[in-house]
Every structure is written in structure tokens, then in C-alpha cells.
Amino acid sequence: MTQTTLLTARRAISSMAIAVLTLTASSTWAQTVLKYSRWLPPKHAINVEVLEPWAADVKRVTEGRVTLEFLPKAVATPAAQFDVIHDGLADFGVILPGYTPGRFPMFDLGELPLISSDVSELAPAFYRVYAKYLAPLKPFAGTHVLTVFSTTPNHLLTRSGLVTQMEDTKGMKMRAPSKSSVAIIQAIGAVAIQKPISEMYELAATGVVDGTFNARTAVFDWKLNKVMPYMTLVKGGIGQPVMAFLVNEKKWNSISAADRDAIMAISGEKLAALAGKSYAAHELAAQQKLSADGMTIKDASPKLMAQLQEALKPLGQAWVDSAKKAGMTNPEAALAEFRADVK
Image (tube, rainbow, N blue to C red; front, top):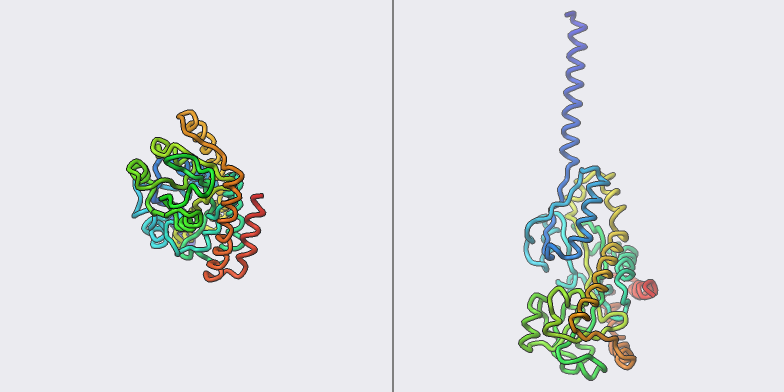
């Protein structure tokens, strides 16, 4: 073999080695598994009808380079999920800002009462107002936001009878599902008791609480109709939780720009709309099942609605004031646009 031939062979082998190493490194870098700290029950609609289909779409649009791994149990408590994701104890998670009072005050906008009865419209509408007004302030710094949405509007669930006028709620002991609901409960003259929904059945059965705010789906899921057989439907809802899907920022940035773009193309408002559609379908099914099981479910009277509108009117301005303290310069516009959007 001549020296020229030997040199050519060496160069060819070297080029092949570099190509193999580059391909291997690129392939290794591109494979990303997002570990999901799942605190919601495995069969919850968010897991089965929203996150599982979305995870399949993520795998499809990234050609298998990004996948979601459902951990067998949650890392820490539901209220600690933001810190879990922020600190990298898990890569992906679902948070309810209302579980950490005072930490994310701007998101109380999505929990205000009398906004909309239709979660299929409400969920994507709140994402739009979030993207325009809240996202620029980076409220979830250290994480990447995949979507944010308002969940199913709550109604008045009671032990001893329907609520026909606001006088019925005076002094009533009511479980508060979130910090923002405390203000609503106090505004209607009731006494707020903050407890998790997991304790609600026992609290009602023993008479510790007289009522609460819940969606029909939650009533069915937790069998609360057995101890609180009356539900008064409030037009526009008596408030609702906000939910967000977040990814650890460093983990997100480890994904290629092309794959990040592909994931966001199926997230954001589209993912919020998917969640809203799922919640709406479950609400309809839950009402049918609860009614068939003997629960009394009726619309609030015109008198009660007028009283609620008057009593709850100050809550909008209270949110505007707190949002200004949190750094928003135009909360009035955000509130007006949110209300107009769902109408």
C-alpha cells in the first residue's frame, strides 16, 4: 500500500469515526423523558383524556425524541408541585395556583365568580388572557408554561336544602376549596373552613360543614351526593380553580428548538381547549348520573342571582387592586377582556 493510499484510508476511517461519534452524541442528546409527578388520581380526566393523548402527540410530533413518563406516585404534596418542578425533583407537573395562597395572586382572575358556566369556553379564554396579560410578567419563572386554564365552574352544594336566597347562607359553615373561594364565602355571609376535598365526605357526614363549592363531576367522583344531596346551580359559576401544566426550565431547554416548537404547536390554547372540552363532557355526564341517583339539582332563582351579583361585585375590584400590587399595569383591561371573551 502506497503512502498516499494509506493516508487516504486513514482519512476515510477518521471521517467515519467522527460521523459515528457525532450521530451517537446527537441521538443521545435528543432523547428526552419528562418525568411527570402525578398527584391527581390515575383515572382522573386530566390524566386519561388530556395528558395521555397529549403525551402521544408529543411523541408523534417529535418522532419519539420527547416522551412523558407517568411516575407511580406524586413527588411531595399537591400544594408543593410548583417547587417540585422548579427545583427539578420532577420534570413536568400539574399545579393549582390557588393551593398556595398569596403566591400567585394574578391567577385569582381565572377563579372569579359569575364569569361563565361553560368550561369549554372558559378554559381557552383564560389561556388567551394569560398569554396576553400575565405571561409577560413571568409569574412561573424557572419553569416553562405549556398551558394555563380555568377549570369547571363550581356551584352551591348543601346538606339541608337548596339555596333559594342569600339569607340561606348566612352563618353557614362552608368548605373553601381555594384561597379565592374564602372571599366568596365571606361575601355571601357564610363561614369559610379550609379543608381538602378528600376530607369533605366525613366533614359533611358529621355536620362539621353545611356546604361547599363544587362542580358536579367532583360531587360524583367523591360520592358527596350521599351526604350533601342538594345542588343550586349558579349561572356563571360561584368560582373555579385555575390549573397550569409546567416543565422544569432547564429540562425544557435541553430539548431541541425544533422539538420545542413542535410541542408548543399542540399545547397552549389548543391544550387548554382540550381540557375544557373534557371537563364539559364530564359535567354533563355527572349531572345525569346524580339526577338519576336522586340528587336535587336546580338553577338558582332570579332573586338569588341578583343578590349574588350584588354581593360578589367587589371581588373584581379587589383582584384589580391585588394585581397592581403584584406588578400588573393594566389589570382592569385584563378583567374586562376576560369577561367579554366568554360572553
